[in-house]
Length: 549
Ligand SMILES: Cc1cc2nc3c(=O)[nH]c(=O)nc-3n(C[C@H](O)[C@H](O)[C@H](O)COP(=O)(O)OP(=O)(O)OC[C@H]3O[C@@H](n4cnc5c(N)ncnc54)[C@H](O)[C@@H]3O)c2cc1C
Ligand code: SF4
Image 1: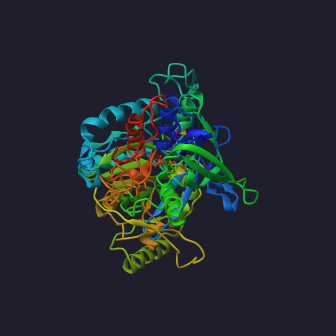
Image 2: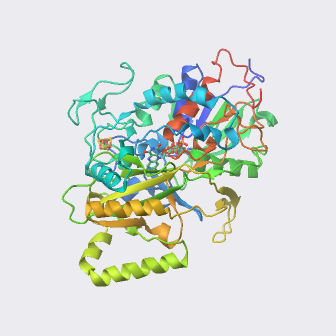
Image 3: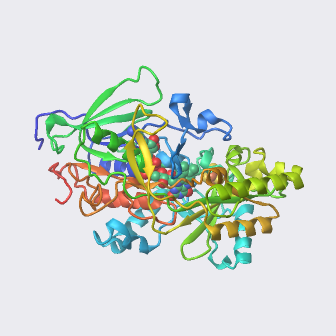
């Protein structure tokens, strides 16, 4: 029954096509709803991906500079945040590592006690794993063997494991062999086996990575969902001045890749799912609250943003006999203590631009002292071994000779995002980070990197921004719209319903209320599966779903 005699363009509009958005699109379409997915980024195919990261315009997303790739970097005072932007969201650029976090994460923070998470979540993780085709990685490359050897030397070898990944690697089949849909009983696309080229983060040019456009989104489109690529949502407002949205919403969009002639458009719908990622959803909701479109969004917006407590270190082995870029992007991991987890990460041969961001590993407390120590060590190395040192810091050959060690900790700690005019650009507001510094120096991780370098016969490395600006890098920004029992503690309830509005949900990394200590995409997918399981079918809905109902 419609509350008003109004023709809606769609039943649901999903904003963003990453993990949360793709799950929402498929499950809502299966329930009989007419679904639109609005995605700011482009649609990609194996043929259109860049060969290497030197193809900056096809790798980076910065449309105002004419860069229309799928990878973005945002710089904040507390963290440099890497994220994806494409049809398929972060899955296009991610490393496909899909791990479930330790159970203790459900006992931390604002979601504790709101549901029997430990009993409910396993079945949703199971569905998410089946849909994303999670399997144990069978291609261990030279970097993975070095990680294992380092673990054995450091006394943590027993915790070494090969990662669980969303990559098509059937046992006993040769690389680069195409099969008719192996995952969805013939409903899905044909797929090709993994070659172990290490290129997952540059976009899989073989069709072996289980990206969302090959599973959830592919099936959602088959069920009638319509995807609008290169389209950015700029406004969402309740229709007919019904302040709680019970008469539906108007969603306004512009063409994201156009600088002029941005083709503004307004679409109407009964329900909205925000799935624009932690940063994207926070940014959009701050803007909409400020301009009065959605004034009732909780004051907790932007609180409890987490970076998964990460530090990126590594080692470079000039003239290494092995090609360290071989394998899959994240082939293996190790636990160096109860809280600290390290993964061996690589880029494909030729994708050397990340080499500009690496420098010599430097210990010590962050600040001027650490920068001084870094300068002193660098000068000393340059004077003593000029050629060897230049070989370590030159970007060319970096991907073949370097292994990134991605360190994550499941420890509590968070920052806050606010909507402010930054001091360097007072003309408009943007997201600005606040709070205690996020540690860039994890002594045990640095020790591990040194042992890794020794075992490999190379030089231990750090990320340059971590040393010079004391700012950690993370690909795992989560939180900011966390699940809680009330708008005084979070932005959505335990069914992901936005406090203050009807038929409005958030399904993405922004709802996560704890540092997971592992890569978050499987958890985002499982939580979205759970949230969608509560929504009635199109035939049954009364269109009055609200937090607490
Ligand atoms: C290089 C790299 C490697 C990674 N590797 C891993 C890994 O191995 N394992 C793992 O678990 N995680 C990994 N991650 C993190 C993972 O990609 C994210 O955690 C995950 O994608 C977040 O899912 P999400 O649903 O929150 O949103 P996303 O997947 O980020 O999708 C959000 C989408 O919304 C779109 N959007 C934003 N704003 C708007 C708007 N206003 N209008 C329209 N569309 C909008 C964006 O373009 C984006 O496509 C990696 C990330 C990076 C950058
Ligand atoms: S290693 Fe290469 S072939 Fe395998 S999933 Fe990654 S990019 Fe695709």
